[in-house]
Image 1 (spheres, rainbow, N blue to C red):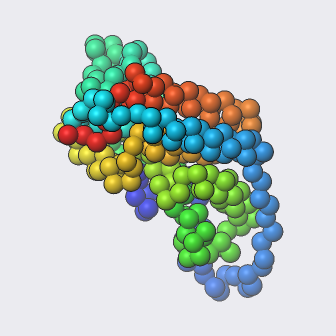
Image 2 (image 1 turned 90 degrees about the vertical axis):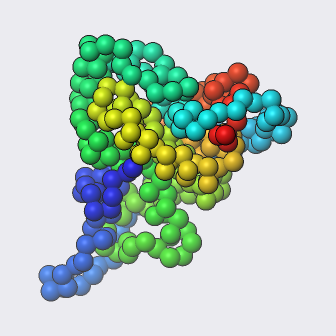
Length: 287
């Protein structure tokens, strides 16, 4: 659902366009070494430690739970549940929690108008294509996959093509993600992306910007990815939380705001994973 590679904008938060463009050797006399700095906020160490401890806590709680006591869910519910964090965010035109049992629709023409105006004003969303462009900026797993190529010794591009500012931004973001890598492993920030994409699709559907048929076409592949990558809601939650931490790093200037954003999302996950929470009482596997 995220925008394709050829649709990327040069103004993306971490833009690697310069690294992908072929350089004109006639216009470049000599490649000079680029000086850059790596800067990771100290709060990221605090966040990484908190997530590591939370992961251990969830593993202990998971061992004590009986899946047989959890409720069976169908494929439609599973898709909605995957948007756990995103669905908790209310907005004009959707004044109540959308729930996870089925698709929510705006209750009146006034609500439809309010929702569409909000999506346009805040996210620049007015149709499916603009939604995909916006989601590219919200999603973060594409960054993780690029960083992963460097960690594994087969870089996705040559960093020499980046100028000082771009190189500093890239190396700093990579160092930030690397603090979370031992916790989340190969799953990366995939769950955060799935959560955000399905949640946005639900809101866009709610105000009639996409049809139910199109919603299904867009979200079923995401649900399949979730089933392939994760086995429990606890695993899914940790990937969500690491993705939220990295998203907070990219989008919040102060360390205080980064920590607040992390705590907000962790609290939402705690409610979802509680024994009577939407994830805690439902099985991860749809029937």
